Length: 404
Image (cartoon, rainbow, N blue to C red; front, side, top):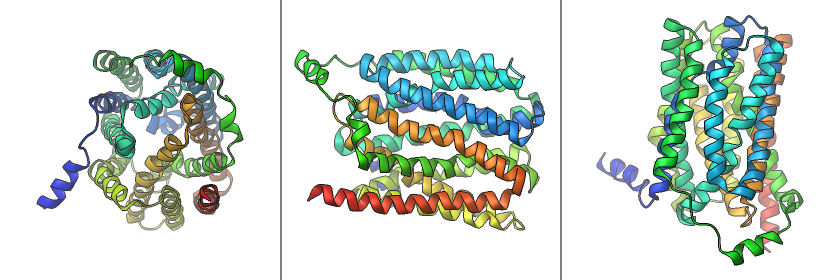
């Protein structure tokens, strides 16, 4: 037991204070992002939309995410990650507060698209911040700590949200979402100072960089395809799975929040020690990404049977293990491949891969459920993971050839 405790503490050593502050801010922000996991239920139960309409509204969530990711990358390369993060979080807080007053189909589509366009410009910026504030040897653990904070916040959020929804309804969640975004950015500006500007020489060198080099990198495109497929499966956790828990197993919002809490608790307790262990083993990043995709495939394949409630627990554990490998190591691949001066563009393309999945995952998943039922959707979702494994193997072969 003492050895386990020592290994756990060791996994947090030598991380910069800025990474700790970024993680604290992310914890505050994500703890307040209560409405996102319940958005599909809110649209169905409170506003009365059917699965097809919900799919279109959530597709706008994804479209906004794509726009925000692309815009955030461009703005980060131009103005720096700090200014982008401050502006994005503040405006996102205001947008969340305003969303509660929208109830028409087109109003919700436009409002959610606009909100996510602002909110997800934050993502490329914070990935670049990790590169700036961490040493190369600590980068994966820095990502792990940030994810731990985000997941701890998302564990607190849905659990509290379930209680609030049952007792007070959904509207209060929008206020909490908005206020915590603004609180997070006040903390950020107070605790983390903007880094010194690059030297004149560096700025001159960056002027002559090929701004489109990221789009000419075939290996990076393959990696983006893997991320897209991974997202197509993983984001079912926030769209179709809550409906499945409610419709088939009759779980209310509070019980769904508790089930999602299992995902978070596993990550909080085990992800950092796991990353610390794997970093010492020097396993190729692409192999770990392939394992993550395989676990994702299995997590949905086992949902094909729907007569035992315990399968929900097995599925959420497999999804969690997949997430613990998938997100840190796909992120590590991008950070190691991004060229200096173009980090924002590389991080934008990485974020856009998941944002595109945000568009298609809920829409396709909910349309399949609406027309063919949940079981067909789980088989197709498992197929995304399997195809991602194939692409991971292709990427592994290409990277070996690049080193020759």
